[in-house]
Amino acid sequence: MSDPDRSGFEEFVAARRPALLRTAYLLTGSHADAEDLVQLALIKSVPHWRRIADRPEPYVRQVLARESVSRWRRRRWRETSTDPVPEQTEAAPDLDQRETLRRALGNLPPRQRAVMVLRYYEDLTEKETASVLGIALGTVKSQARDGLEKLRALLPDLELDESVTSAAAAPRPR
Image 1 (cartoon, helix red, strand yellow):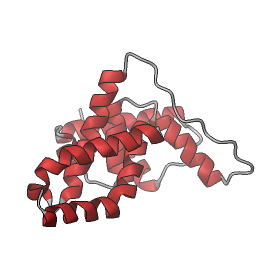
Image 2: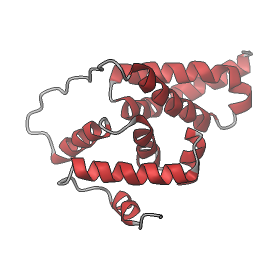
Image 3: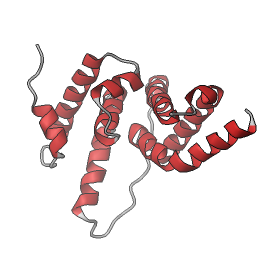
């Protein structure tokens, strides 16, 4: 990697690493796994840096999502542990809801979780989500619908964001 390419890559990592870590954490449910996933995504992005340097984030996000699903497939036969949640005294309801929602996301299959994170956390369109995950637009729609249904079943008392609620209220395609 030449010096200008290297400095551009380092600037990208310095600027976007916290956002990539948040996305990876939502995909994996573990801080340690999120760190590993971001590191792997960045390593896989280096050989393509010249091609993606103008807009690296969509490419890196795509690697994050795909590697998350691949890692889950490789590890699904063994039990994984989650980071313990520290004891909190009088936590705000907002933080309690976030933690509850994060745990519920962990109960979704990896592809559904990736769709939910990219659509509703990263605020990507259905088309962008399909492109990042390398799946059909209809698959994104059905995975989002099924994921919302499952989250609603798991969390009947949780008030979901209006954009999530309206997306789920759309009639199911036949």
